[in-house]
Image 1 (cartoon, helix red, strand yellow):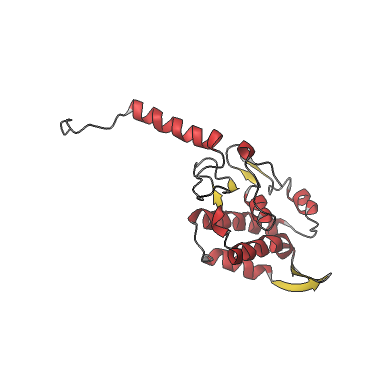
Image 2: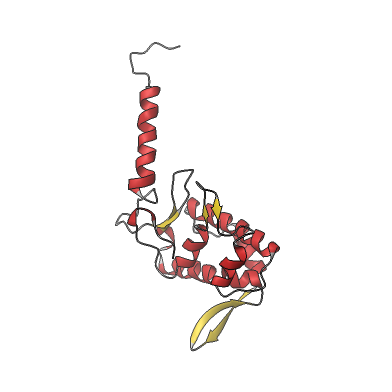
Length: 184
């Protein structure tokens, strides 16, 4: 599990694979764990071999389709996500007395835990607690542990503070016209 900004608690275990996948790219530094240089190691750390360039590109696209879905806070699976899940050729098996989502394809093995986590979250009702930071240059995935589920930023002390500071600056530079202002 990747360290969370501002000391935020990570997502529950069933959503950790999704949160980890979404956070494989840092939009501010442009570091991407799914880059050509690091993809093989990323796959190996997850016990997946045989994934090539086509799977890497497919996984990057899937990641961004998932990010858009999480940001939209919609329960219905978008067509792009559904199509990617279809190509993963996932199936449920029983291993060691437990149900497991598996696949015979490298892409499927890379996304099986993520898809299973989404299913669990939708069933358990905590799907809408996984969010994407509202700061356009961040877009970090975080789990909203707040009581009223109203968090907007990955960390109020980081992105929240930056957004509020930028808004205050814009108000000072371009003040809103008051009710007594003459039309231009």
